[in-house]
Amino acid sequence: MNYLNFFHLKEQPFAGAVDSRFYFNSYQHSYALVKLKYAVEERKGLAVLEGGIGTGKTTLARRMLEELDETKFEAALLVIIHSGISSSWLLRKIGIQLGLENPAEDKTILLAQLYERLMEIYDSNKKAVVLIDEAQMLETKEVIEDIRGLLNMEVENQKLITFVLFGLTNMDSYLVLDKPLQQRIAIRYQLQSFTEKVTADYINYRLDVAGPTRDLFTKDALAAIHYYSNGIPRLINTICDNALFEGFLQKKEVVSEDIIREVVFDLKLIDQMQQENPTEGPSVKMEATSLRHPRS
Image 1: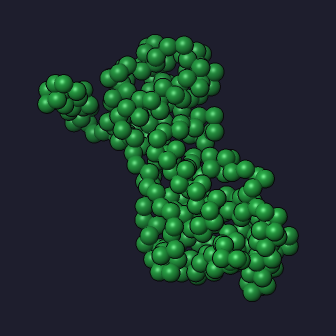
Image 2: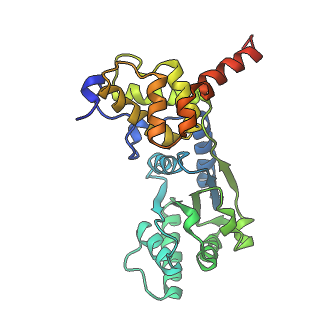
Image 3: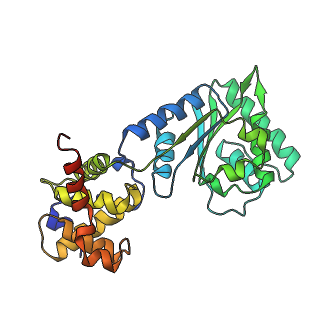
């Protein structure tokens, strides 16, 4: 049982998996991509994108990889899934992703192999780029130092490789383990939560991609989604997906603010007191704002 037929959708607009078709090119995401692409195009060496949980870092990393021209870049995306990785594992993984065959177990030999492979990429007039998602997992001093070691590989005053790190805002607590590396960050950008307007635009964009023929959320519902999600894309998706399913169960053709409140209560995004006292919700906040700013 699902809500697709009920709402005349071709597919789920708020699925949790990253799907490039639903990529929402907000101003800040567009701006971040411009800055990160500048870093790799100019061989800046190290760029960092930070953001809170669920703000779209992984989506942006995959989008960037897709947009890097294969005729100009030898690019790879690594996703760090746990903090226990070794320096040798990371170096071998980087080598394999950049086309290195039979990476050595011995670290000294492996570094020499990586240098040779990076020179091959350079001689082919391409730029080596490694995007690392969940980079806050790079917690050990040895791993951080080896990234700096790769950045030391240069030719004709140009970096042979550029790293773009995507991670939580606590990344600096690990990058500081190697001060020289931290000082080499050439480009840095931090993703913020969506504003209320951008939240509404984001929801409507994803609905348009999924194929509705009409608005599925009231204006108050959109405001409530922003209020309870704090403008965090991952939470927006979760609330919207649950709200559409709840609307389907209740046979409501349009999702109202009441349905949003039910959903966020079930998801434990609000407590019992807020649920029983809707005067504490987003509608009243908006009314108060309009009273303070009657011309806005």
